[in-house]
Length: 289
Image (cartoon, rainbow, N blue to C red; front, side, top):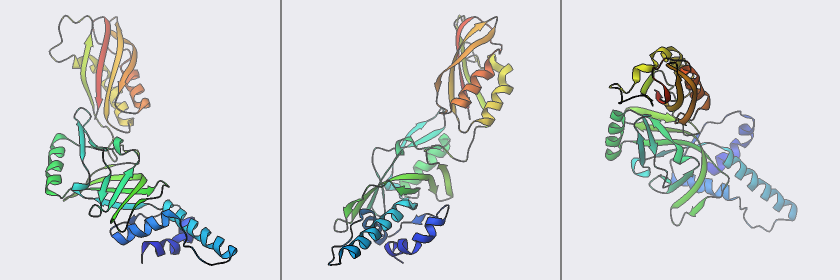
């Protein structure tokens, strides 16, 4: 059943349903029907005013129904670009400088927050995904809904462009789903389980410690581990503090790639009072992974 007709048939049931399954867009005809519905332009007729008003209401209902549904699109390797790899956080970003292109370049998607999408990945995984992308076997699967704007394009040009709001992102390869991100572009399905103290530096250091001071906060490891267990995602925190009597005083978060103020605050509290030796101002770089 064409998408245009299916939307009419599903209207009543969808209005009552708490959640809808995503409609997979795989054919050109579906894009035509979706754009026709979003444009909400009833055909000109010789109907009397009451009938014309009813036709207009039906067109608006169709548009609202089309705009309220979730759609699923597979973006092929050539339809998206991989962005920066943040090695410290083990996150691979999407390159959001261009729209996502699917269905043999007939559909362009302008999705909100595409610049903020990142997937959890090790350097080895990034290398493997890049190889798959070159081979054309890497896909980006996106579930989204129209943002309310009318779609641009035409059947004559065999090209349409739609703005939308994402629900989920998946990186899919020959072995299935490789990584996922949620509606906000945050890595999904993985929470920090470990703590790594990257560096602890003090003003009183005559020279950088051989181990970058990583053992200085060993007494706080248990408390830091609890912070990792409660964090929603991985990342790094840079904390400034004052060393008095060889212990951490007045810790303060000055950089936070966790994008989680609660978890970053937990890390700062966890090192308060921990033994560090030395005196003066200091900084600690701590990663949850």
